[in-house]
Length: 231
Image 1 (cartoon, one colour):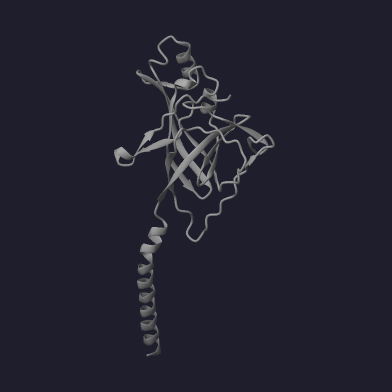
Image 2: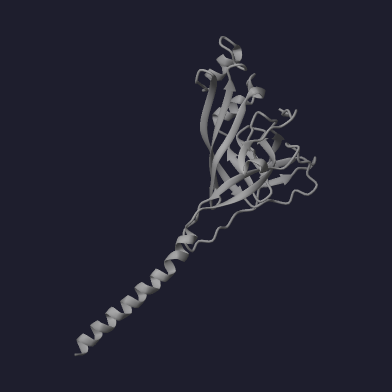
């Protein structure tokens, strides 16, 4: 009798726990769902050694490893003709990654031109009406540091924004981001890890995507006017 009573009690307890888990399920599912945040971008800079791309946002600072393909275009004769977009950005914890596509039209790189030959040598693919180069970029996300008094170059004439997908971290693990290493140098410029930062002119790297209110919030490549690079 005692054994039967014990088994019945065990089954009832297990059933109660199962019911409790079912009640928790939807909350856990919500914890594991992707979310998005809207980032306002203000400056795009490159370290003096050309190895890091630094993007200053209103919510976060981002430091990316500069892909060799992107470094190659910095001194390319066709760089001012590029239409470059970065898409599909995803952040998880302190990491962030995305994809890029650089496009050079046939008109800007006609057959037998030096620009076309250089672009093909830099890894661009010939798609007939245009040359393209695709790749990925990844880096680290930081909490913004205090840059009061810094001479931050204004890359845009108006606010530009990009959507970032926030991937959930491990359940029960709080996201802890480090403070951005971007600091104000003695001359009022910016530096990171003792390396001076220089602004990247557009349209060399057209990273920002402008939200168009007239198109129901869809994303369109941002256009800049007359901003060259300082390098």
